Amino acid sequence: MAQRPDLRVRIGSLELSNPILAASGTFGYGVEFAHLIDLNGLGGIVTKGLSPQPMAGAPGPRLAETASGMVNAVGLQNIGVRAFVAEKLPALREYQTAVIANVFGSSFREYLEVIEVLEQAEGVAGYELNISCPNTDSGGREFGVDPKVTARLVGEARKVAKRPLWVKLSPNVTDIAAIARAAEQAGADALTVANTYPAMAVDVRTRRSRLGRLSGGLSGPAIKPITLKLVYETSQAVGIPVIGLGGVETAEDVAEYLLVGASAVQVGTAHFADPCASLKLVKGVEQLATNLKINNINELTRSLRQ
Image 1 (cartoon, rainbow, N blue to C red):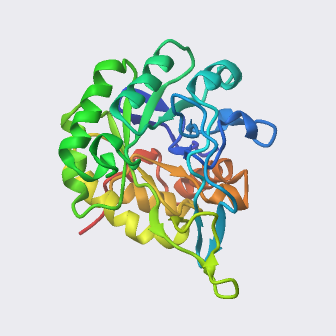
Image 2: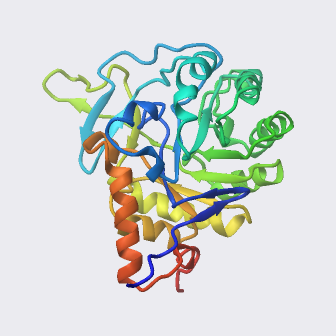
């Protein structure tokens, strides 16, 4: 019998059973999907973004289907970090899958508060800083558009976080490599590339936005070619692992991200069409590796031929 390919990957100090993670905001807190799939089959789960206090999120409708994707404006709805620790984390501890807590805030202090609460809890493997949020300390600009602000936030988080620290970069910058290097130099263990792209969807009959807000973020297959390039640029600029995120639906999509420099991928919008998408991708990647006669999935990472 042929040997099964080894799908294990390392993201800094974390070893994942495979390179497929469920992306933040598309998989609840993880436990909501436990009756549909075996969570132990995933490489990791990135939780919904957590803030110090509960947030109600944006008004509906929050999703609008577009060509090859969707525009969403969920507004970072969440139950707050303390409720997460009390109500969701106990169930997540029952699984071997790495749980990465997505962290956000509108000020430096809010980010640090979330991490401080999580540091006192068991069952979290690491943190993912969402730096695409409006920074009220700097007049509303995103934390992730200025290398100096990015470095300050990551540096302060690094002082508080004893666990691995990932940083989720915004694609809405002129030079993602500069932001990536700033995060790496400030202490990031890995980078997630990238968040959604600013977009709109309008209804010609009502002459209104299809969302409860005027605009939202574009995700899905439509953004994959753009994000592939950002992953490539980021992986060329830093020495730490990169996790690709954007339009992953097939095993070939996963392989493409690995080829251009990612060590793992996150699956997002695909969950809205199929809640089992991530687990199916694990099986798909294993079959693809077998077909390509690849014994270890890491053979693909950064192997793009010029």
